[in-house]
Image (cartoon, rainbow, N blue to C red; front, side):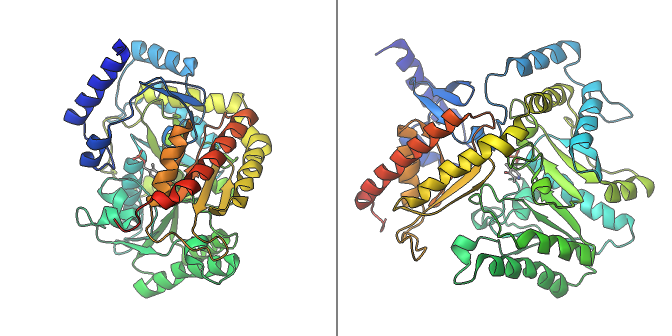
Length: 461
Ligand SMILES: *Cc1c(COP(=O)(O)O)cnc(C)c1O
């Protein structure tokens, strides 16, 4: 046994003794053992056993500029030495927080010029709930407090984030959702569209927003929140008819549109924001993940002029904020991260070159007998694994084939994620055509092996 293996086994043992992991069945994890990731560079990560993996998920949808960016480490080091911390409370601020808010206002849609900083995507969506309700309060309509969201949405994991999200298995733990948060259907044509054409289905599920507003009464409805493309739910791309109809309904009734840009923001669709891609006019945009490319934790809520003017002009204190709101080190790193995206024209490259190339190569996987649909936009992709392609029929127990496929993928040196039987990718935005070829080749080999392995699955247990 080499000394490295000894270290690795010891690390695994300590991990199982002391470390509780997010979204994890700890008993199951301890039986299997953790994968200890020790280093990363560009689009690759290495585990403690020396395996090199192509990171098809950009960490957790966040490492947009790729790993190993020395300039981000240098900026953090310099800022830590100059001013490691100061808060934005009590009339104070710091240069990186000011510069970052200015740059974000510049890259956001024209009608968005303010940002409130948080530490994560979940905190951002919690902040949204407070600001939405504060807004209607200040306009003298405090009863306008209900926020409409969607089933199978993901908006984070704090109490408000998980409530806004539409994940049933999350609601079941802890008595969620919080009062005043309701859910309508998602625009998931592949699973829920039945015999309808995608556009007809898209119009119908968007129409549920209008029905829900009328059912609850417009005097009670404050806002609608959605991801431009549902990420954790399975990279769900709405039919083309969906978003224009949602925007029309929000405009017609004057309710606030909250766009959760935590995944789509910072270039993932080939535009700076998903709102740019779908030509939406949000009142709030939640941001995190790609804001710092995951190098440090940071989030924010971008606020439209309509809302900001009300919050500011009607006066009074917004009784909300975090110790780390506008943290100077994370802000400096976010600023440098945005500068990399700009200087290297990474968003443009995803729009014009690597994004279309990824989508072209990814769509070839639709020919595979196991794949019922291959879809994607920009640097997001999903594969629906099915028992019967023509009928869009799922395997009888969800998640079994997805898990087999995910494990095969890791064995092939590719990180893909499975949600149920949907395989998803979200690679670093710096992936080249060569990386994309490697990703698709490994995915295809993985699908072949998964198909071969299906007879060994026990669907009854
Ligand atoms: C990841 C995610 C969040 C939560 O962000 P955290 O930083 O994990 O709190 C919220 N919304 C969306 C769309 C996400 O993908």
